[in-house]
Image (cartoon, rainbow, N blue to C red):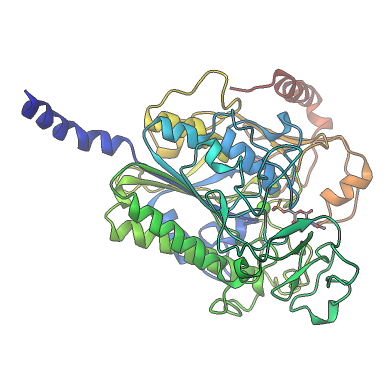
Length: 507
Ligand code: NG6
Ligand code: CA
């Protein structure tokens, strides 16, 4: 009897394994639609991403849900639009965790499906309890482990914010108790060296903000002291993400696993490893893209070496669109040449125009996904419901309120479609939205001209009207507002957007 059961199990197991792929989501930071050669970049090449695109499904309407980091990551993890929850904007150095521990996350869903789960890279979703924030010298919780991740190896915020240390599970790595880490919003002492007082000593000058504590010759947002033995070099981040991801994949090679690899490239301060510096001739922004591409390649090599390429769904995406000067004088704009980071799209980071959220989006599962280019609308917010569908785990009714199962579109199932509509937001709290329905795009800017100048700063410093309508099929660059000619349609879209916001869910 037992033998028969074992034999049956042995026969079924490969089937189950084939149906339950490992899932790796590699999210770049501030990588624009036009920043990789598979999406039209010609000034440099991204061979590893291009290979993934050639072997998988490359989406031309792939999105992240917001045009800044924290809200996109919040939405990716929770499957809910970030504008539904206060306090999900760009997280400060001492910010508390913005994902409530009782939320059902993509990591929880993976765990329910029997997966091992990990997050490696940039977190930037806050840590610790509300009202307290991270307790840097002790156990730091709640954090990723409270929302479904078995393992984490992280940069706590974003690297232009303090502190430059790694968080492995609950602890800062290599912290010497005799040199405690202190993080704050104000200078700890009158003589604390900053980017203002010691500006001439900096390796990379700041252009706005980023003028507080100096580490590795770069001044940051926020102040810190101590933890010297734990501090990393900016140049080594990408190597560390690749090392930790590969080790975790290898350790979990025999079970289904879910890995969220959140690279810091190509966020400021752009300080790629010495071996990438100067490689493109377009400055450190483009050099950092080569470094990101290298990381993707390292993960692919590991999958190939372990024979996992045909058992693993790999998604490559970004957390928001491109930005040139984001606070440091790295001359990204001056050295740009003919490169167009946003591809054909208008706007970029901080914007609700397409360039803010329409980003590279590639799905590869060797042997399962037929190589193709798809214009289906898919978004990082959909990965939760799609993972639940692919792994056959139920999605609780009250969870992942805006996550749509687009697994058919991701896998290229015949007849399957992506989303019908998508709400895009900026950092939140502004009332600025993009609303795409089919090929129509309603742009809503509730904030007045001052804010609009910020939104538009990558183009011209001109205010924009509250509502605009674009036909993306004819005008992907959102250059011609056709609201007046389509007044009735515009009214319908306005009410539909308002209804989705008011309903508290769209799934
Ligand atoms: C902004 C920072 C910018 C960047 C951004 C977050 C200033 C003037 N600007 O407030 O440099 O850190 O926050 O970027 O400080 S994100 O990709 O993590 O959302
Ligand atoms: Ca970002």
